[in-house]
Length: 250
Image 1 (tube, rainbow, N blue to C red):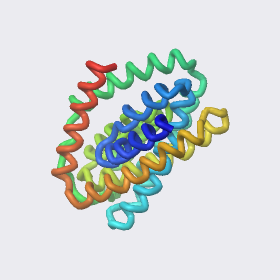
Image 2 (cartoon, one colour):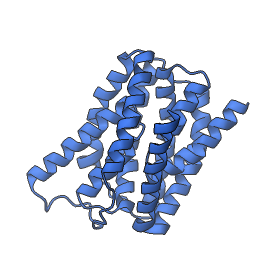
Image 3 (tube, rainbow, N blue to C red):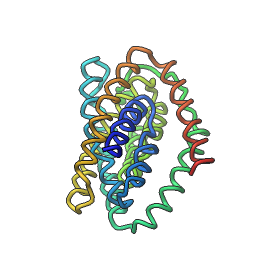
């Protein structure tokens, strides 16, 4: 019972962090492994909470009228294709190797996010039609690469998505809306593949999801109501805290 309460509580925190900034899986993945799940099963189980959290977050962003469904084409589509490769890699790697890769990736993501600023204010348009075809192709390629990473490990993928949406000119409110829709799409595919291989503990996953759904709805409300400047501050603080935790706590 204590373990499930821990999962629910960590889901609350991770759900809000994932929507506002990213990196909530840096918290939930180690907890799932601490509770006894093999690394590969923890990787699959973690996605139950992420999927349901983003279902709720997409609904909430749409309700606040900041979600542009055209991002299915230039963001979610390429990312989902990339996630096929990433998920395949996660399924064939051994648990011991995955643990080692996870540590390296988490450290790399933390360093990269400290170096890469999510501070561009951007505009409120998700219309890429006015941009060059080359720019459109590069954006799709960037999301394809993001999808590979997200399919493999998920942790920290939100930071990368916000970097890409900032690069195409979106502020962090609309960038977060694109992020949750993109993550929803490729996570649905990844979770299906993990479940097909029997690498999902559904009871733990649904317990985690109960927390992430509530946390995600809180995160959407804070993102929309507080605006770009507040989200930028939370993103910055989140990056620093995760970097310190990974550097000193492993």
